[in-house]
Amino acid sequence: MATYKAGAVSYPVAAGAALSAHSDPVLLLLLDFIGYVLKQDLDAKLAVIRASSADACPTANRFPYDPTTYWVRNDTPALYCWWESGGKIEPLTMTTSVRRRDVHLFWVYEEQVYPDGADMLAGLLADADMAIAHAFDEGCHPTYAYGTSAAGIQVVNMIADTGKLAFDYAGGTPGVAMAVPVGTMNDQAGGEQEGQVVRGFPALKGVVRVVERIGRYLPTDPGSVLTDSLMTINTNENTVADPSDVVQIMQRVLPSSDGTEDGG
Image (cartoon, rainbow, N blue to C red; front, top):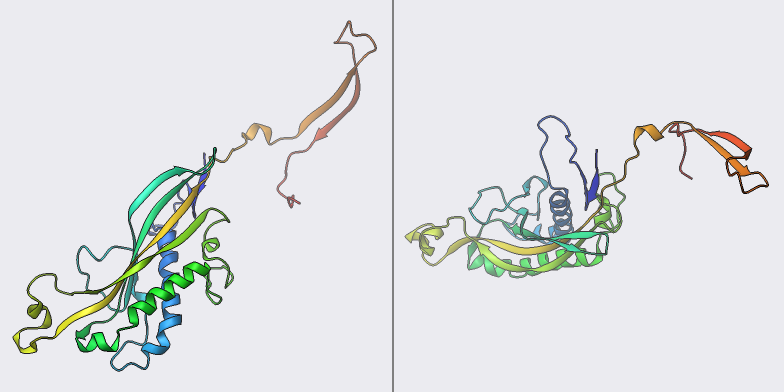
């Protein structure tokens, strides 16, 4: 079977367990890493704000799909990551190529009543953006680990071989997400009785540029060569006139691999 690797994935894609999800390992890593750094940098401050969630990004509220084309009333705060655009194959060297794609992120905090909510959380989205930007600039977090990887190593190396995967945070844009996509601002606020107040969710949209190096097909030896081989070394006699007149110097059996070699 012909095999190759691209980024963090080996192809053909492994079957896995029955009814297992067909996941994108890049999205799962980004959700976990971004969620972790948001909690590390924001939780302490959020814990002392009145009527505010002290958990910037609960583990259960991280989703690998796009919520912005339709409002999904999942619990908040929540983090979404999805591939939307930018998928392009480009040559890297004479023998290898890369796929470049843009992964979009959307972090949404819990619902606020404006204008009071805007005053209390005026610095929230700027700090969230800085937490994400700094983490990607460093390429890691000293206490972050994923799966069986050690803490503090480059995050891309937690799921891919060195040089096979790269991330670049292109920055974020602040905004307010509305739970109800139709009607007037007053309708969204809850009706006439609420006057000039508006309900909404502070939100940060951003883009992570992903580069995945595409490997070539890995050569596979046919089974017929994985056997012991008879090696013979011959030489000619003194005469050049008869090249078939040879003298055998050595004959040995070269054993095949038995799987116990350490490769050293």
